[in-house]
Structure formats: structure tokens, C-alpha cells
Amino acid sequence: MRKRFLTGFLSGLIGAMFLVIVAGATYLHVNDDLKKNGNPYEGVSAAEKDNDENEYTYDEIVEKLTVLKMLIDTYYLEEVNSENFATGIYKGFISSLDDPYSTYYTKEEYANLIESSSGVYHGIGAVVSQDVKTGIITIVKPYKGSPAYDAGLLPNDIIYKVEGEEVTGEDLTEVVSKIKGKEGTEVNITIYRDGVSEPMEFTIIRQKINIPTIEYEMLDDDIGYIQIVEFDDITISQFSRALRTLERKGMKSLIVDVRNNPGGLLNSVMEILDRLLPESLIVYTEDKNKQREEKHAKKPDQFNKPMVVLINGNSASASEIFAGALQDYNKATVVGTTSFGKGIVQSVIPLSDGTAVKLTISKYFTPKGRNIHGTGIVPDVEIDLDEELKQLITIPHDQDNQLQKAIEILKEQMK
Image (cartoon, rainbow, N blue to C red; front, side, top):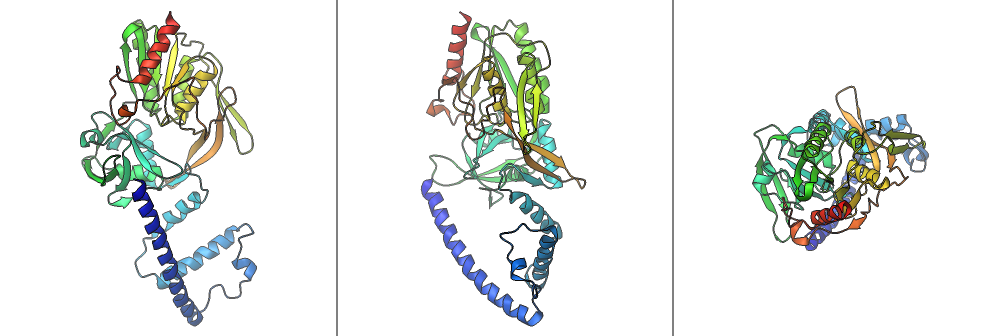
């Protein structure tokens, strides 16, 4: 894998050098034309042309875009789609923030975002994650019975291409939007898999996906087990139903599993924690002006049984709020490996034309004032999943060494 990426890097470097040479030639050619047709920047001072050390004004940006548009209209060989042209400007404007979590959504992308957060969407049925440093996108888990599961995608598969186009480094939301689509249509995905030398091609038929955000059961010794796959709108009622069912069956202690949970909606995790904590501070945020906003548990009823929370390196955002609050109040023992480390909050702001923009607006802090961005939640009991289990979609409970450790801890606490 390292050799492939090194080869790609060197090829890209050579390609970049080639583009520089071609660009230079093109510049000289266009410069000759400008001498004939007139330079749109003629009469503009050097200070106005080179504004690197000063802030650009709105008028200067519009003026330069006008010049660029004129050059494209005059010299560019192919036809230009005006909608793509405008979208590229908007996306580039937001991407210039150099924040992997801020992005511009087209109408279609925003509609897909709303659809998926409701717990129902059309796609292949898999949780995906992106390394913010490398841009590499991986399959975290295909949902059991989903098109991705039936096609044979596995945890830790690297998504290399979608419909023949490389997606490494692209905005994760845009990649997910490409994978989603009309029910019954096909999507072609190229993946790299550890231990397989060549890329693997998959053609998957999209289906309506009902995200199973909660799975639960009663384990031996009256230990309840609830797995939260994502924190969506539907998760609130599903969690309440699971907890009530387990309590009616005589649950004496509880394991909440948020391993591989990428996060989700802040409101969802707040409502669930309100059921588990006393009336208290759950999380607070601070914006760029140091304005603090607190979120509190308001319901007097709380869960008073021994509890363990399972986390791993793919537990992010809302999952970390969940584990961090319970850890701060000593309401649960956190078991597993250090979480992802996403301690910032995004807000999706709809625009009047049906598009939207997502911006990072604040940092969040656990009740004890911990901001875990870049560091993650460190478990009380650290234990890594056995290596041979990491690419299994479903791990039998009796082989899951992290789960078995959680059971061992609860049995000791119940003595």
C-alpha cells in the first residue's frame, strides 16, 4: 500500500511539474494576445495587482472574477456550464477556510443531508469515515443486510474511486452524495483492501436504507446491551424503547456500545443523556467571541445502575459528548481505545435558494471543561480489539474481547 501511494505521489509530482511547464507556455501565448487585444489590468497599480499583504475587498474580488470570466469566454476551448461555474466558486470560497468540516452544499447535496439525518435514505448502507490528514476515506461498517454488506464490502476497505473518479481528499459529504442515488440504480466503487495487491471493483445497486441506529439485547447475568450506530432524529425514540424493554426484563446493569459511531445530531445525544444523567450540565460550547452556551439535563429521572460505555478510534463527535459526560460524572466506566477526537461543532445554515453551508462555529467542552479536539476521550480501561476481529462485520459476543472486558467490569461492580 505504501509503495502504491509513493508511486502515486511521485507521478503527481512529475505531473505537477509538467503542468507548470505547460502553464508557462500558455501564459506566454495569452500574453501575446493581450498585447494585441488590450490588457484588462492596464493602468492598475502594482499594489492593486499584488494584494497578498492586504485584505481583499469585495469589489477587488468581483473585479478579478470578471477578468477571469472574460479570459475563459475568450480563450477556453470547451463549453462552460454556468451552474458548475458558480458552484465551483462557492465551494472554493468555503474550502479556502482550510477546515475539513466546513463545506458548501448544492441543492441535491443538502437534500441528501436532510434525508440521511432522518434515518432513511437511498444508497448502499455503510458507515464511512475520512482521515482529516490524509483525506483517505474508509468503510467503517456496512449495515447487516444492506447492499454494501451483500456486495462484500468490509470494515477498513479504502474507497479509492466512485464511478471511476478518485475521491481521496474530496469532501466526505460530496463523496457520500455520489454514492447515494435513486433506488434501483447502480454505483461503481473501487476499493483497496489490506492484503489484496490490486484494487477491487464493486457494482452495487442502491436501495432504500432504513438506518438501524439502535440494536439491543439482554446478555447473561441480566446485563443489558445497547449499541448506538448513529445519533439521528429516530435514535431518541429507539433508545427509549430499548431501555424500557431491558428494564422490564429485569436489567441489573448496562453496556452502551458507541464503537464505530461517527456521531450525528447534538439534539439526539442531549435527549439520550437526559435519560441517563441527573439534572446537570451535559456539555457547553464556546464560539469565536468566547460566548458560552450550556446544555443541561432537565429530567429528574436518571439511570442508577452500573454502566459501561464502549468506544474506539471511530467514535467521534456526538459519541464523544456521550462518553465524556458519563465519564465526567462517574456514571459509567469507559472501556476500549481512545476516541477520534472531534471536539468542534458545525452548524448547517440553509440559504434562500435551497443550497446550504456548513460551518464550524464553536468548540465543545465536557462538563469538567475538557475540549478533546485532536486528543479524544481516553478510556478508563484501555483495551484494543483483537487484530483478527478488526475486519469482521459482525463479531460474536463471546469473541469480542472488548465486550467481554465490559462484562467482567460490570460483574465485579454488581458483587
